Length: 480
Image 1 (cartoon, rainbow, N blue to C red):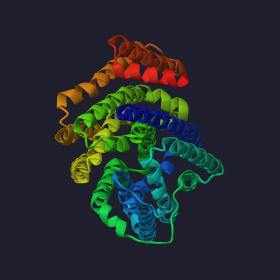
Image 2: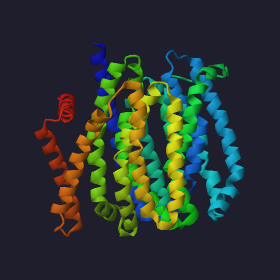
Image 3: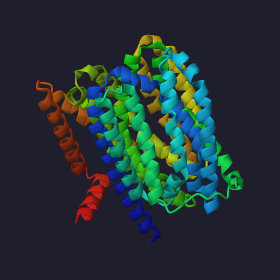
């Protein structure tokens, strides 16, 4: 019965995670298309230069306490309250530091206009700090439906605000405002859905039991954000804001793609893997099942995005963004492996090994930083190709640590991952070949999408894929 209960909870969480992320990406797509048609690559480039600072500040304010609260066996009001007040205080201090450092940031990029824009944009992470404990409560208790509704509401409100501001000529100020409106709406929804409330009885002693675990996640998250934003930093320093804008546009579409799968899996992975962490055999079975499902979803979605990128970008946001389509094709190949890597890191965190998570992420980030710095004179596409290759190859390093924890053999994992990857790659290559004669861009995009989807489903059905049939049965049962 416990096995069945966990399976049902996981399936329900994945379903709501899918609804959440599907709705999020659809809304992102709609509002992104509208604003991208109104604004230009320079507008996106200006905001993109600041993104890494906001993300690092966001990691510092959160300090890894969300995962620490989820991993804690016995939890009390005092734990959430200590995290709330600590994160709020740290966030205020960070904002003041960045406020006065804004001229230095603008000087690094040689863009004086970034001074007021930075001081305004950084308000976002200050507001976000107020919702960390509420978010952890929803996450720990697998309240995926509530988090899904939160995301949908916040994206709708902020998307409308972004479009209105773009239409009224606010350019990059509108993009910054859209982000601030989003985090404010998220916090209000978290406050509504979560029964937990902060109190004025401030006591930081509960943090002592979490600080060793969370501090390593903090360092890890900082390096993850640096790693994910290397191009924005390097391009902003050595290239024009237009090239930064083209890259950020491509990266936005890539993020929409792999976040759909990552968000779905991440909504349940850590809590579920944590529940079975005391039984290695059971945890291995649960992990493998999640691994197969992640690969089953990720490879066709992301390789399909790479396949249709030129048509998609041209149709959606006009050919002024066509250079970003070629960048997107490379990013999407690497993006296919990101949800898989995220699942590996969730397993490591569920075992309480935040030190492994930290050092391996730092090592990966340092390799990429050095490589990108050495390669920037050779152009964006060369840097991207090597960046993607390093990310894919590093999955083998993550697997080594997972093997040490649950003894999952390399070739067993390889079979789980690449059985879907090879099928998806073969399908996309075949579709690219057979659709070459089509000249009309709309027919070409439609033919690619329908042909790839049909071929992938037919091959999985014919091969007797258990993951595919179980997913289909669950969806049909829910509809019935």
